[in-house]
Image 1 (cartoon, rainbow, N blue to C red):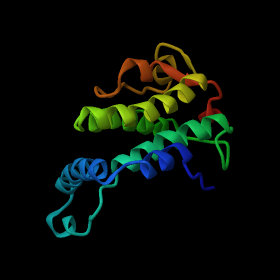
Image 2 (cartoon, rainbow, N blue to C red; image 1 turned 120 degrees about the vertical axis):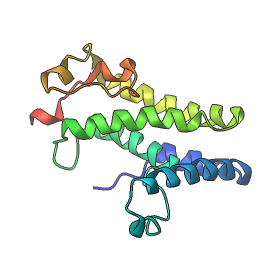
Image 3 (tube, one colour; image 1 turned 120 degrees about the horizontal axis):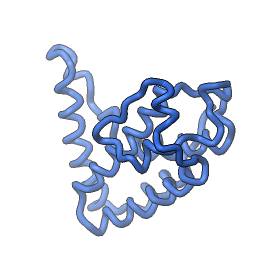
Image 4 (cartoon, rainbow, N blue to C red; image 1 turned 90 degrees about the vertical axis):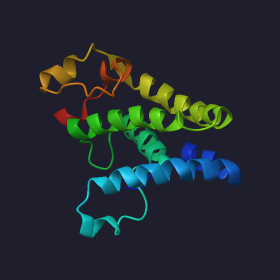
Length: 157
């Protein structure tokens, strides 16, 4: 299954060269962080960050798509994957915060639109679903994300 992330693609297509340069600088910082976790002989093999800002947007948009479409392709999604997506969303906000204010506003407009989809497809539960599975909230994931669960729980299919 492939989902094209139309909001993310439209956003990136509308960015100018200066905005893309600012994002590239944030991605370069992320690349160095990711390389730090690798053995010296492998660091040079990683040439683009696994969690580049555009990819983070696409991951968050894909989660909203999957929730709204009954978790394609197989209707199943591990709770650990969901936790990773929540962590990714929190880190996306951190990365955006490193950009100029005008660019932050542009990116946040799309990010918040995806957040609205997320909120429509989840319900507040105070974190009970994660408690049930023995999951602890990572420090970087805000309660506003952690304390919501998908309406249709994919890890029970």
